[in-house]
Length: 337
Image 1 (cartoon, rainbow, N blue to C red):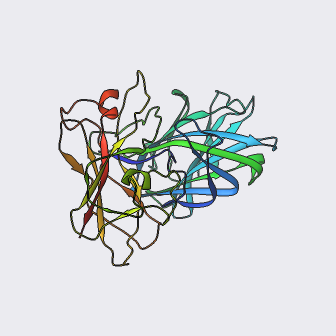
Image 2: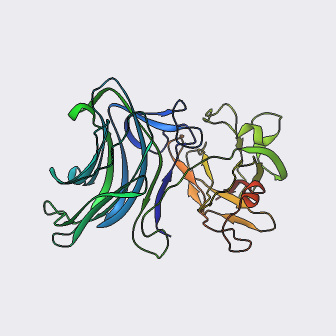
């Protein structure tokens, strides 16, 4: 599997994100219940492991009082910009692709103001056979082939998403982002265009028969862990005995005729003893066994996004997930050493 990031900001916080002047927003969202708002000189950074080829998807929407509203997505090595895509929201605004600081291609699809726009970009870094190709709402819109290596750097180690309105820093403009995804080209799965995608969250809505952890209050356990956004140490479950579990029923997804490409569990947790203890997040499909995402070491503060296994098929029948499968899904947490 080669999906490196899938992010819909549905936890309504910025835990685990490398960001400046970015805030979760429930006022605007393309799917689910939240997006991320990049304001003023804000930036959001995603680190990757030295790639010379990648695909990313991002949905964007701009609002504010600047004449020109724009976002800039740069692929970089450290702080060196290898290339970028600039997206402008006006009746005559288009996507522009850059190698270094040189524009190499301009699209023809205008990005209407106040609309969500789905942008996809493919980047290959090479001094002879490089390529940058963009899609707007699934339609190819701008491409360049040739030298995409403006200097000595041969790999990308981070993407930087920034508010870039009126030709500079985006004063008085907000850029909202949602449904972000990033693929590399290895592994035979998720190794090409990300395609359209909508990310939602299903919260716990009931206790199962497996409830081992200690609650912070004498109530149903699921009511202590269903907070969006999290309430820190106000309500929680905890445990110190290895391999104790809390498993919860999840709310119905409310989806109709859709293709479900992946699921994963996500939590906010910390180690109260500051000793680097581990937890594992669990999913359980109807009729199947528990699937663990592997041990995750916890910090002593809520600064780490805890993720479980990403599953692209139902492990019970190895077939694509269906709405009925999701509506019967359970999830939870296991204490580890």
